[in-house]
Length: 273
Image (tube, rainbow, N blue to C red; front, side, top):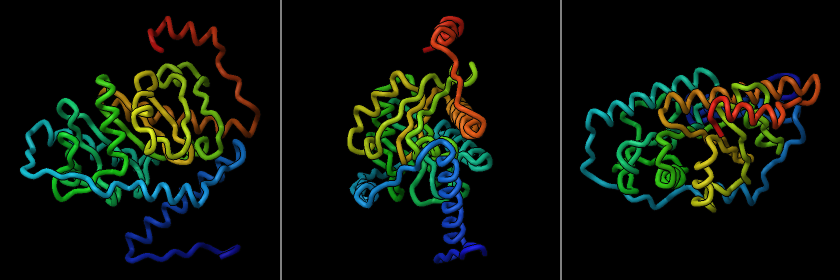
């Protein structure tokens, strides 16, 4: 309603609230992206392709076991999800967390459950490529599985859509982490890949995480990986903080990044990259 307000409807109060939260997130992303460049919108064909890539034939297994180490991981995941929601790094309708459990088996968040309502019992166990019976994992479960298979050093993954990182993702603006030494040390350089690639070329995307801690997906999300889940959350927090700094600084002038020589000095001093 022009010069008045916004009206949203839903099947119930929770549905209406989630729609409103998602609309507000979308608007903030567009506003921030406009500060960096021109917003690049998805075509109808791209949206349809995204919907069609929802996994529909997931195999399930019965006789699920929940030993103490598995239950502890579920609790840790829920704590990180709620912390992410509290800090604006996730919203109710988007955000995926997974943690390696044993070998290539892992735990992952479910689909169609409000993120701040997720309980340990909602988390989905993935074993031998199959999901525990009665639960539906995140639509990106295949990529998470392949990342763990190809990258033994990775034990946790967070995929989400913070507004400032997404401002870069929807404007095609390079997310340059060479702002302050800490940002580069934690994240190194962050590559960006085209929309849809995480579903159409899973092996190559998963292989990128051998040398990249963070990968941005245009008009989609950001994937952050790490050893322990708390470390992965820290990387996400640093990434969104850095993106916010770039959005805010755009009002006063272009970024003056740390130079290549200084980056080489950081590589040697901190044994990174």
